[in-house]
Amino acid sequence: MELHRRPRSSGYLIHVPKGYEIYENPNAQVFLRKIQPQIITPEEVAIVQAGVKKTAKLDYFMVDVKGKHIVVYLCDQNANALMAIAQSSSTGDAGLADRMAQSFTYSPMMQFVLVDEETREFEVERWCFRGSIDDWIMLDSSTNLQALVKKYARHLGQESFYELMP
Image (tube, rainbow, N blue to C red; front, side, top):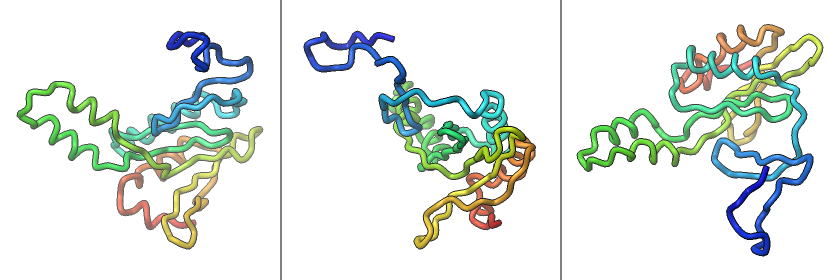
């Protein structure tokens, strides 16, 4: 892959070194990193994406894979309220809603962790917001990822999320 933004003499990256990739995280930060081994299958990612969209009924979320983790990020802003304001704006700016959506930030809320590559067993964890903990709390595990997503993703963006405990 070649990037053609600046001449070679500027000190900018012209070629991605062999064994590396360009990675963009859910908050649009771009990194050059070593190519990560694919442990999670595209089908497993699709199960989480579709399950969150269907059961949580969220429009603004992201799913990212980090090693053995499929992480679900939720929008930090009240995206639906902001989009309603943008769409009702009388400024006549047709691109306002798109620009607003691009400025949203996201936080990790739930993750599905592959704990056994052979049986494809996953644990589901939620982020804990207790000041003394601020870490992931393991809730459940199963070899049926779709069942885990269905059971727990519906709590994303809801008050019931904070009641989920092991």
